[in-house]
Image (tube, rainbow, N blue to C red; front, side, top):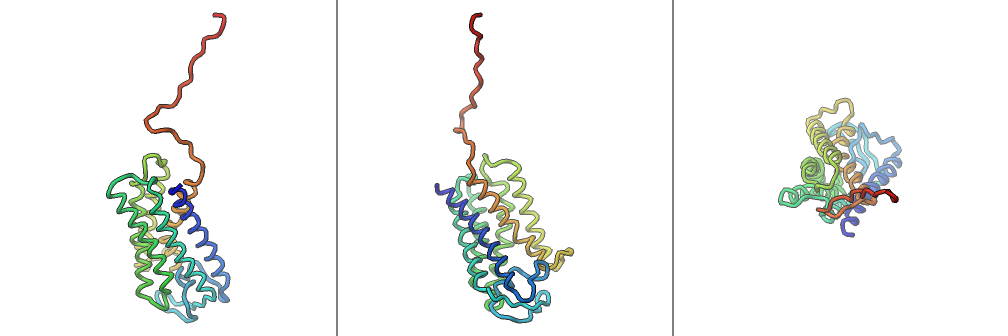
Length: 227
């Protein structure tokens, strides 16, 4: 039951985030761009021309909703990571991996509590926790999932971690590869959310289980009657 609550927390956190993201960006008078705008722009408290790292005008009427969503997402990511112990292998490496993932949750909470145009340093720290600490945790997760987790899902986890960390490096260096500043930031930030949604949804589906150490039943040959 505890594990299912953890999976539910992940799914709820990610779904509400993208729902609020759509709502808040829709409220912009000047169209919000996934390529030109940072995710954090949605939570900025004031209307102003922003020059760093790319010139853009920011005015987010529903910024309070976005910041509340950041906080909710971060909290639910931490809750999910804490309650899904059955998903992981045992050992100190798994504990460290889960702490790194939880760090991403803390980063989202910090980003929501400290909008970029109000408390920039705290907000940047939150972003580093999300895209740095969190993505390192995502990469390590590929090798720390429990033995009953399908191999394709483990490989996907590792691939997402590599993609996110690579994108984070490109984002920091200003190499956007045609995706724009906001596009590259999303490639760095969203793989973790996609992973949480996929793994959480899988965990909530009915699973065929077998008691460890027991062999599957073999069909018994029957001798035809009358012989």
